[in-house]
Amino acid sequence: MAADYNDQVFLEYLVKSLVDHPDDVKVDRKVDEMGVLLTLRVNALDMGQVVGRQGATAKAIRSLLRIVGIKNNARVNLKIEEPEGSTRPPRREPAM
Image (cartoon, rainbow, N blue to C red; front, side, top):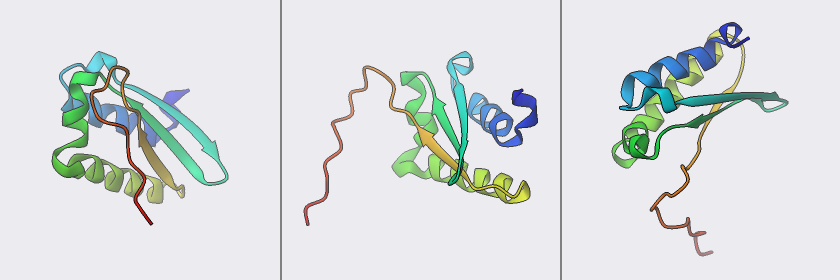
């Protein structure tokens, strides 16, 4: 099943190459009218490596996935799930 989805296989390979706990990398794939949504889950200790300084690594991964999507005539989006037990403070809404 997963072998048919180049975007999911590519994301798993890429992230497993970056992290210290590759066995904890999980990618879910959903398709709807907006395109393909890949949801990434990694070990809490690996979040910094996946996101990178000021989000640079996550941005680069999204750019690469966009290219894979273009090649396959699909819009590919990436959602990185916050691991349980995260110490990051809750996101604040900007004041208007």
